[in-house]
Image 1 (cartoon, each protein chain N blue to C red):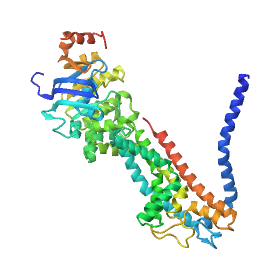
Image 2: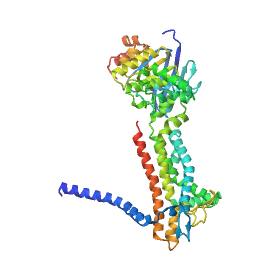
Image 3: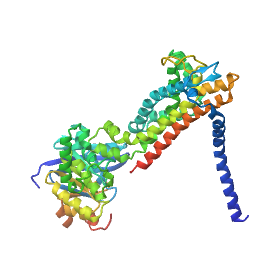
Image 4: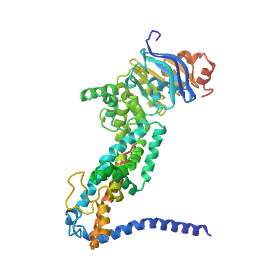
Length: 253
Length: 281
């Protein structure tokens, strides 16, 4: 883990919504092929942090960012097109949000937007990405049916496949299992553990136990500050800050 | 008073009010159909007027109205939809977008005869299009712009926000997102507004009065720079300006116009209800 190259390098990064600081002076490296989990109570800046990594934060009209985020040593604000960044850094949202299209069309949406049309290439991408998200066997016979007909857990895995089809570098998960039952949750977590072989994963979760189960390293956010970040095992056995131990032992939050 | 009695009175009053709303519609329909149905024939719909409009058909008026409606739609729909897309998808809440929205509200409140005068001043005189299908269509187009912009805006705003976020998060550009994840879902609503505008354009008399409508033309219009007869104005002419026209011809003309507008509104209603049923988010 120590030798892994740095994927995201974040320096002196701030996010403001009007007068309100959602993130303050963040310094952090996220390493390639790790699962980096972020925990913290509501309004701690977790989702703001995640949305900063693929610039979805730009959609919030009142948001102002300062500081620097580099992906593979390239500044994500000034060094690349936002569309290219979002293809490299995919996001799975808290709720399964399939588009009102067929399963097939959901998976190839990003590819079509890149102008890829060859049926052969699209079909291959669909099978590969649905296999990667462990959905292929369940849906291979009904790819043309509406994605809305799938169960919640299936929809969330479809959303993962939709990102994987574009062959990204980084997967962002924003409380991806908050709306799912325990079995679906377990499947998503298993899938993440496999996917980190190929991708870098940043997981924001409300579920402290989930961070402990899948995280390589964990950061604790509180009111826009990152209180500490360390190896998950260390964080959960010997947190450096009292507020961290209070949170993970359930004293507040 | 006894609660049961007040309840009964309230019920009766409410029912009466509701019936009074329905009554005029039914009476108008009954009179027009009763007096006009006998005039409707193939010949009436598809032949030229004869003998100083006392005999023959109303084909030029029907055709003229269709031309005008078509022209208004060709002009107003692209403009209105694009403006709505800009207002909903691109503009932030600044003084310009507020000004535009305010203008649209005001445009909707302008009496139709004012549109007629406006069309006369701008299109007929200033641009020199003369009294022509072009001038009339443009005038009607401006009149129905607010309907089209407002319904398009509502349709665009009813598309869930997360469609846009998901599409953008998958690397689509802003325009691709609008083109592939917003417009297709707003289309039925936009079409509904378009048809409502169409019905309004078909029925109005004042805007075409000074800009295109002809009292009587012996031939069909040959180009968009020709004048044309139109149903609402023709109805006005044969009802008040020309003596000796059979009652069933006048009511028959009204029936044709009414049927045209009702059919358009019906199409809008059907489209909207199908859209609601299909909606799954």
